[in-house]
Length: 216
Image (cartoon, rainbow, N blue to C red; front, side):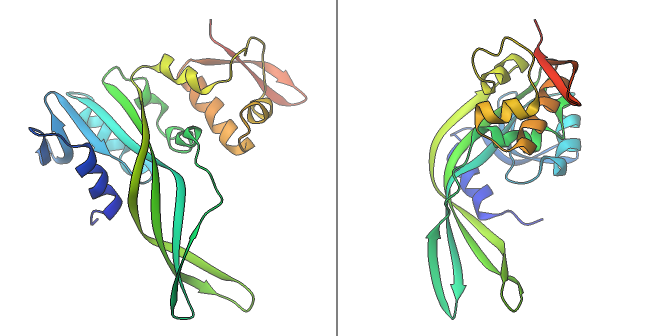
């Protein structure tokens, strides 16, 4: 699969003098090798690289760098003219659980670390489907505008930072979604992943909803 512009830009932004780029490790190609650490820039679905990281963790320290768009400027061609508008959506760090839900076993590996990069990006969209009253678009390219901040997670306990303070009693995923002001679907992925990481325990039910509590 060809490298995307966003992937290349993040690799250029992250790399330092002395790093080895696009080097072969076993039967895989690593984005960056820095000393005893392999750094993988992941701009897509974690399912796509899960097997690769699982294998590399058997012999190397692996850091996954994952960008989350904070603001997105969208470029569409409408009636032959390119229109650039900013999306109203504001990115959240919690969105990483949309991917971590596929690989909680990797996250707890002592050789694994995650670096979330909060970024502003630009997206090119083209028409995917056009109906009588509605037009659907698909993204064909993404470009980095700037990096806002980075946050590193090196051990399972670091992920407790995602939970709200004062979480002393059992709670449901719906209660968590309200406390964090996130969608219930994302809250469910969070509690599932954190339970698999042994940060949370299932402790019962209330009105058919699962109850979770911090592991003491």
